[in-house]
Image (tube, rainbow, N blue to C red; front, top):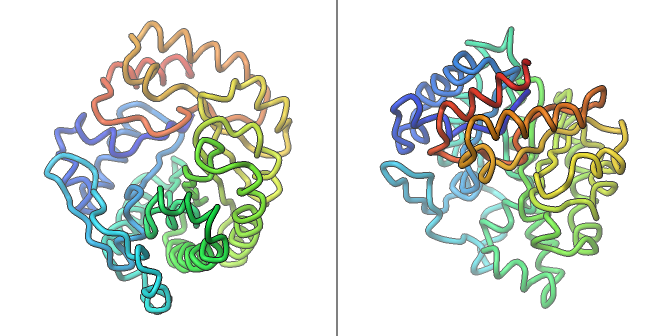
Length: 316
C-alpha cells in the first residue's frame, strides 16, 4: 500500500502547512513519521502544483497554514518564453528544499520503504505558467503556442528529473492532472501531450531513473492505452474509474495504483466504512499488478483514525 498523502500528514504532527512547505527537515520528518505511524509500504513527497512555476521565478504566496498559492503566470505574456529557457530551475524557488527533503527521507527510511517523489509533468507545469483557462483556450485558438509552451516544460521536467535522480529515489512520479479528459479531450492529449510524455519518460530513464509513473486525475479510461504507450511503469487510477474496468483495459501491462476516493471515503467516511471499501478494493485487485492506494491526494484534515483504518484493512 502506498497512499498519496504528503501535506495531509502535517496536521497529525501539529505542523502548520506553512512550515511543512518551507523546511526540508520538517517535510522529511512528517513524511517519515507518517510511514512509521501507519506502516505503509512507501511514502510520497511533493511540493504542490506551484513548484515548477516558482522555480522559474513566479511569485508565490505561502499562507501560514495552507499550500503555496501562485500569484502570477509567467507566460501570460509569451514574450518571456525565451528568457525562461535560460533559467536554472534546479536552483529556483523551493526546488533545492525539495531535493534535500527527498534525500533526507531516503536517508531515514529508504532501506525499508519505497520513497516516491513527485514532479509536475509538462502539461501541468504549462497550465501554471500560462494559466489553466488560457491554456485551454490556446488549444483551440493557438495550437502552435501550446506546442512551444509544452516544449519548454518538457525540458523543465527533464532538468529537474536529472537533478532529482541524484537522491537515489527508486522511482519518479509525474503529476499531470490537466491531462485528464475532464480538462482536455483525448484527441488533444494524443496530439500534443502523449508524444512528449513518451519522449520525456525515455530521456528520464536514460538519466538513471529505474521507473517513471504518470498521475492523471479523473476518468482516464479513454486515454489509458495512450498512457501505457508512453513507456511509463506506473499509472495512478482515480476513484472515477472502477478498478475492475481499469484492470480490463490495463490487464497486467503496467503497474496500477489506486483507487479509493480521497475525499468522500478517506476524508469523510467513518473508519468502518473505510475498512469496508478498502477490503472490497483488495478483493477486486487480488493477484494483479496493483498497489492499493487513494486515487488522488488525501487532503489535510483527514482524521488519523481514517488513515489507520485504511492501513489496517490492507494488512488484514
